[in-house]
Image (tube, rainbow, N blue to C red):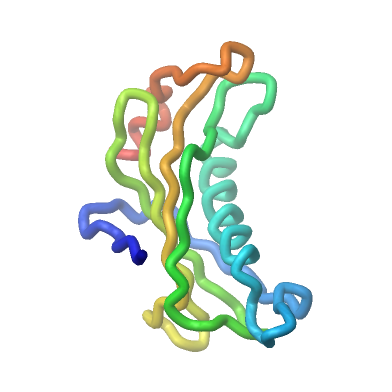
Length: 139
């Protein structure tokens, strides 16, 4: 099943990620689990740039679902441009969307993925309303 990214999304962050030799598997391409790491790198860099990185003992983001569409095989060597988008802010959650393309092939999407993020209080183990500073970034 392929999940399409929505047209109505806001670009909030871009980052470059180097493909490492160790990212590849026995089939000679980047292992499918590593794509999720690339998506995570983009998501965490964006949150960290806002001062909202995960806080295991406080308040912060928790991923409640995640997916990745594999459009083309990434191989070493190369550099990836990850574009991070957001949409659908709710009371305590929002959606993130990320595309991965090679820097040497601008505009060619190699993978696309997303996740639903819930803002939570770790000590209570419950969702809480999105902070105002984050809601401003999502709008």
